[in-house]
Length: 155
Image (cartoon, rainbow, N blue to C red; front, side, top):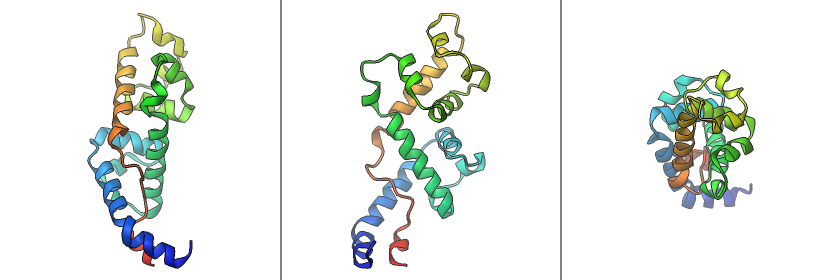
Protein backbone atom coordinates (compact mmCIF):
# COMPACT_ATOMS: atom_id res chain seq x y z
CA UNK A 1 0.00 0.00 0.00
CA UNK A 2 1.45 3.43 -0.88
CA UNK A 3 2.71 5.35 2.14
CA UNK A 4 0.48 8.41 1.57
CA UNK A 5 -2.59 6.17 1.44
CA UNK A 6 -1.50 4.37 4.64
CA UNK A 7 -1.13 7.75 6.32
CA UNK A 8 -4.64 8.86 5.27
CA UNK A 9 -6.18 5.58 6.48
CA UNK A 10 -4.23 5.80 9.71
CA UNK A 11 -5.22 9.39 10.33
CA UNK A 12 -8.92 9.20 9.45
CA UNK A 13 -10.15 5.62 9.80
CA UNK A 14 -7.81 3.41 11.79
CA UNK A 15 -8.59 4.79 15.24
CA UNK A 16 -12.35 4.42 15.04
CA UNK A 17 -12.15 1.00 13.37
CA UNK A 18 -9.73 -0.23 16.03
CA UNK A 19 -11.88 1.12 18.89
CA UNK A 20 -15.05 -0.39 17.42
CA UNK A 21 -13.38 -3.78 16.98
CA UNK A 22 -11.94 -3.73 20.51
CA UNK A 23 -15.25 -2.64 22.02
CA UNK A 24 -17.12 -5.37 20.16
CA UNK A 25 -14.74 -8.17 21.15
CA UNK A 26 -14.00 -6.95 24.69
CA UNK A 27 -17.70 -6.52 25.52
CA UNK A 28 -18.50 -10.14 24.66
CA UNK A 29 -19.13 -12.43 27.61
CA UNK A 30 -16.22 -14.77 28.33
CA UNK A 31 -18.16 -17.76 27.01
CA UNK A 32 -18.59 -16.07 23.62
CA UNK A 33 -14.93 -15.07 23.53
CA UNK A 34 -14.00 -18.69 24.32
CA UNK A 35 -16.09 -19.74 21.32
CA UNK A 36 -14.28 -17.24 19.07
CA UNK A 37 -10.90 -18.34 20.45
CA UNK A 38 -11.77 -21.98 19.75
CA UNK A 39 -12.68 -21.10 16.18
CA UNK A 40 -9.43 -19.11 15.87
CA UNK A 41 -7.54 -22.18 17.17
CA UNK A 42 -6.24 -20.29 20.18
CA UNK A 43 -6.10 -21.47 23.77
CA UNK A 44 -8.86 -20.92 26.33
CA UNK A 45 -6.64 -18.48 28.22
CA UNK A 46 -6.91 -16.07 25.28
CA UNK A 47 -10.59 -15.58 26.13
CA UNK A 48 -9.46 -13.80 29.29
CA UNK A 49 -7.39 -11.26 27.36
CA UNK A 50 -8.64 -8.08 25.81
CA UNK A 51 -7.97 -7.70 22.11
CA UNK A 52 -5.31 -5.02 22.63
CA UNK A 53 -3.39 -7.34 24.99
CA UNK A 54 -2.86 -9.96 22.29
CA UNK A 55 0.06 -10.03 19.89
CA UNK A 56 -0.38 -9.27 16.18
CA UNK A 57 -0.81 -12.91 15.13
CA UNK A 58 -3.39 -13.65 17.85
CA UNK A 59 -5.37 -10.51 17.00
CA UNK A 60 -5.36 -11.41 13.32
CA UNK A 61 -6.64 -14.90 14.11
CA UNK A 62 -9.39 -13.49 16.34
CA UNK A 63 -10.54 -10.98 13.72
CA UNK A 64 -10.45 -13.63 10.99
CA UNK A 65 -12.54 -15.95 13.18
CA UNK A 66 -15.02 -13.14 13.91
CA UNK A 67 -15.34 -12.37 10.20
CA UNK A 68 -15.88 -16.02 9.30
CA UNK A 69 -18.43 -16.59 12.07
CA UNK A 70 -20.22 -13.34 11.22
CA UNK A 71 -20.44 -14.46 7.61
CA UNK A 72 -21.90 -17.87 8.45
CA UNK A 73 -24.21 -16.71 11.25
CA UNK A 74 -25.71 -13.76 9.39
CA UNK A 75 -29.47 -13.77 9.94
CA UNK A 76 -30.25 -13.46 6.23
CA UNK A 77 -28.67 -16.91 5.72
CA UNK A 78 -31.19 -18.43 8.15
CA UNK A 79 -34.21 -16.94 6.40
CA UNK A 80 -36.84 -19.47 5.29
CA UNK A 81 -34.91 -22.65 6.12
CA UNK A 82 -35.17 -25.01 9.06
CA UNK A 83 -32.61 -25.06 11.85
CA UNK A 84 -31.43 -28.51 10.79
CA UNK A 85 -30.93 -27.43 7.18
CA UNK A 86 -29.06 -24.33 8.34
CA UNK A 87 -26.77 -26.41 10.55
CA UNK A 88 -26.18 -28.96 7.78
CA UNK A 89 -25.09 -26.18 5.41
CA UNK A 90 -22.44 -24.86 7.80
CA UNK A 91 -18.84 -25.80 7.03
CA UNK A 92 -17.52 -28.47 9.39
CA UNK A 93 -15.22 -26.05 11.25
CA UNK A 94 -18.13 -23.66 11.90
CA UNK A 95 -20.42 -26.52 12.90
CA UNK A 96 -17.79 -27.71 15.42
CA UNK A 97 -17.66 -24.20 16.83
CA UNK A 98 -21.46 -24.16 17.17
CA UNK A 99 -21.42 -27.49 19.02
CA UNK A 100 -18.65 -26.27 21.34
CA UNK A 101 -20.62 -23.07 22.01
CA UNK A 102 -23.58 -25.27 22.97
CA UNK A 103 -21.35 -27.21 25.38
CA UNK A 104 -21.69 -30.42 23.38
CA UNK A 105 -19.04 -33.07 22.72
CA UNK A 106 -17.71 -34.89 19.67
CA UNK A 107 -20.19 -37.66 20.45
CA UNK A 108 -23.12 -35.33 19.74
CA UNK A 109 -21.28 -33.70 16.83
CA UNK A 110 -20.88 -37.08 15.13
CA UNK A 111 -24.62 -37.81 15.25
CA UNK A 112 -26.45 -37.38 11.93
CA UNK A 113 -28.06 -33.96 11.61
CA UNK A 114 -31.44 -35.61 11.11
CA UNK A 115 -31.22 -36.78 14.75
CA UNK A 116 -31.93 -33.17 15.75
CA UNK A 117 -35.45 -33.48 14.36
CA UNK A 118 -36.27 -36.48 16.51
CA UNK A 119 -38.11 -36.01 19.79
CA UNK A 120 -35.62 -38.35 21.44
CA UNK A 121 -32.73 -35.94 20.83
CA UNK A 122 -31.86 -34.74 24.37
CA UNK A 123 -29.51 -31.95 23.27
CA UNK A 124 -31.43 -30.53 20.31
CA UNK A 125 -32.84 -27.56 22.22
CA UNK A 126 -29.40 -26.76 23.62
CA UNK A 127 -27.92 -26.66 20.13
CA UNK A 128 -30.77 -24.53 18.76
CA UNK A 129 -30.36 -22.09 21.67
CA UNK A 130 -26.64 -21.81 20.87
CA UNK A 131 -27.52 -21.25 17.21
CA UNK A 132 -29.85 -18.39 18.18
CA UNK A 133 -27.12 -16.87 20.36
CA UNK A 134 -24.60 -16.87 17.52
CA UNK A 135 -27.16 -15.52 15.06
CA UNK A 136 -27.82 -12.62 17.46
CA UNK A 137 -24.17 -12.04 18.39
CA UNK A 138 -23.21 -10.37 15.14
CA UNK A 139 -26.20 -8.04 14.79
CA UNK A 140 -24.25 -5.21 16.41
CA UNK A 141 -20.83 -6.04 14.98
CA UNK A 142 -18.96 -3.18 13.34
CA UNK A 143 -19.03 -3.28 9.54
CA UNK A 144 -15.24 -3.33 9.41
CA UNK A 145 -13.26 -5.37 11.93
CA UNK A 146 -9.53 -4.78 12.15
CA UNK A 147 -6.62 -6.45 13.91
CA UNK A 148 -4.26 -3.57 13.08
CA UNK A 149 -3.54 -1.04 15.78
CA UNK A 150 -3.69 2.56 14.52
CA UNK A 151 -0.01 3.26 15.21
CA UNK A 152 0.96 0.43 12.83
CA UNK A 153 -0.13 2.61 9.90
CA UNK A 154 2.62 5.09 10.68
CA UNK A 155 5.48 2.60 11.18
